[in-house]
Image (cartoon, rainbow, N blue to C red; front, side, top):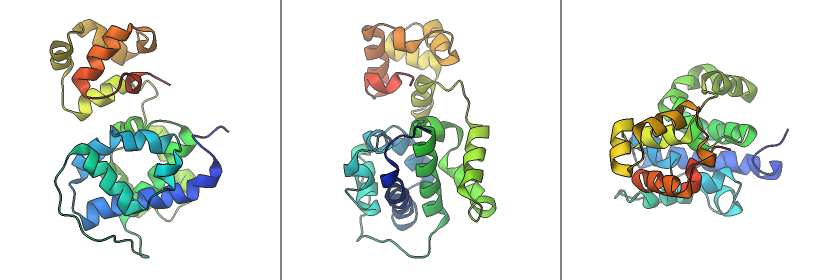
Length: 210
């Protein structure tokens, strides 16, 4: 099985993402839906998913959480690092998410658009004492195999297809075809990708399907 990055990093990646989620959601009290959205589209999540050592191993979870929050521009009341031996459901959510991303090679945006952090917390009581393979089965069952990155970015910032069409200048029907998988966004023109990415506040490559 080919995973997202070397297996040597996965234990630390799970711990760090778990600590990051716990610090952001519990210690700092960041709204879970807000954090779900900013993490999904952040450069941090992209670098983490690719196994960049700076993000999966080069900083602790609290530093990772601050990096995600700072990238979003959110003003928050910071505090000293806090990582506890008794792991919270929020920690488990990050720990589990890191593993599934590593194994599946899906982007965090793809995963969280189908199984958001609020749903992960709902899983906790049933799944946290089970083998992680059971969580993998849950993710696999709930993630749309016809996932569109374009749709994920659009919904995460709260734009309708019509609104995206107006703000980007890309025809509504073309956006619909991209999201339905009936037109390959990887083969569209660089100009179309540029207009869509500019309207969505992401990079052109973020919209390409892997």
